[in-house]
Length: 495
Image 1 (cartoon, rainbow, N blue to C red):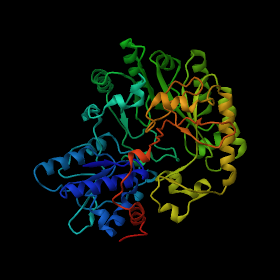
Image 2 (image 1 turned 60 degrees about the vertical axis):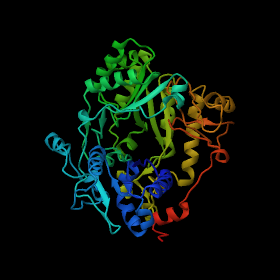
Image 3 (image 1 turned 30 degrees about the vertical axis):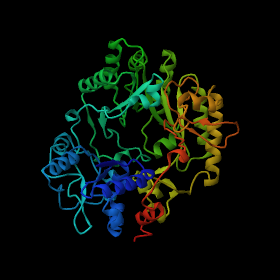
Image 4 (image 1 turned 180 degrees about the horizontal axis):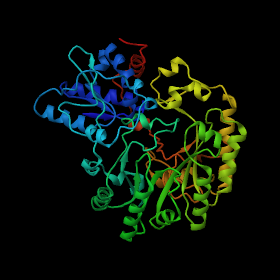
């Protein structure tokens, strides 16, 4: 049984399910993986060893990519054997920072993707209750050897996008990042450093055709890539254009690269493809500080070309970057205001992500992170500003920029919540609000209370699902006390 743990809020549910399953079948082999496990395995293992009641619920921890480890586990268990990892013990993840690594080269990358005799990327529990740490966490998947994602176990008709005739599925055209420099990003630690790989365009096209054949109602393709290069944009755009199916649309994350010219933008427009650009800030000093690599002359040229073509890209931005001054935050508002007819946008409040360069070297960025916070199991860490505007001013600045920008982009702040609730899920047990801000055509804004000046709920651009569950009708049973479990994981309540 495998649990992919995306975030801290899934830990207690996974432990609870594991407890119930082991209660029914003590021989069940349970493996945890996913981004949260990758980030916290080094901290989690000693806690699990100190609290065997929890440790016995997790037989193995897989870090980074999991296809090869899961295959080796399944093969061993099918033979009636306990899976065996690769012994030796490697450096803790915290000591394998991308800050101190260099590009590996194609030959080594190819070697990293070869099958292993035992389980790579895996820490496994042995009979005495301790964990043997893997001697090899460098395995990466050959993207062209992976099958098309299989959604056949899911009743897609229960999902909001499919119910509303906008069926959306996720696929992946690459892993890791070819840029690997943004100091606020921790995506670089979820994969082996400098391990950017692509799935061939031909295989991606086969994936899309398979989705269209097997999952009726699919019209939207969301690429879960860290970044997409311009050449592949054109190849995929031509593929969608050739299909002559105007109901299909797609979206990808990209950088402001100079080779995204008018011809590329025209292809994206004609294929109904949305480019999601990481702008972050319009201030050159801050762009340099966080090593974003954007050149504002390229940004302006790209958006001016988009305006001429009638194409609207999506911009991801951040207010509150380390050392930011009010005047620099104001530059972002002015920038978005200038292009309000040309772009759709998201404004995020800055957070420190675990294992990002900013978290690893906070002094270089004018912030302080308490030792206790460094030891927490949360991805996003509380920090204190030592330069720029104060911590108290930070939320004020964020809300001010957010509200004024939304007022500049018409149509985002008048929402009939009850009408949306009944439209999406009349039973009111689990629903989400799907809103459109201005001309933004992508679905599923996260709707969030923000105590803003105008009434109602405010879509702020995060594509996240918010659920309301009727706890009285559904009920929740924790056979593990959450406080005990969390205390044990934090090292404060080992039994």
